Length: 115
Image (cartoon, rainbow, N blue to C red; front, side):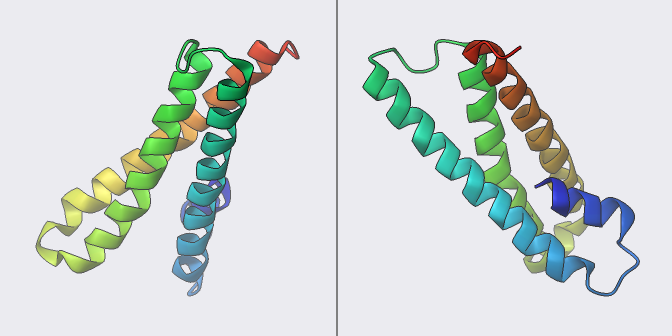
């Protein structure tokens, strides 16, 4: 996800930026999905309840927003009459999902005792 954001922020004048941005964002969503599945399995095996700590809520929010981000990005090319609103929400959800994902990672380090 960070690579997709980096390309948009700093390399958008390159003709290939969108061809990199799309798969980078989708790869980020897939990685977060794999992490979410792994987290659910680990918590289930540990016998603890789900969504008991802020780390879990931050991770869930980041994962859900990360799914909506590429959907909004795709829709802006399909619903041209709403392009400004869709682009605005695509950008917002992209930044917010990245923010929540970073917070989830940091809070996970706290929960694990590394910080």
